[in-house]
Image 1: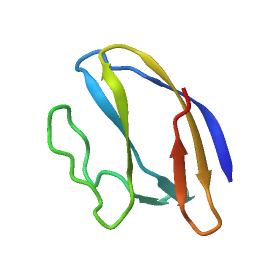
Image 2: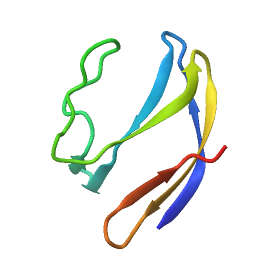
Image 3: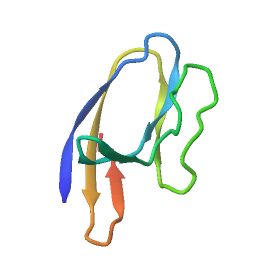
Length: 88
């Protein structure tokens, strides 16, 4: 499965140097599995991640201090691998 598009990122409070990605699987309305943070995220606080799952980080070429549009392509293979690409 392949998908592509854009992400509009807003950073009005702080500068950002990267974006974190993870997957939330929703099997039914009340059953979900996340591969991301295991508690709520707070600005300037340590983020506790699910260590048994994969996440991805995209490091920006420059610090971002205002809105930015990022192009992405992702591919989920039959073997379960997930690939991200960020074309210019």
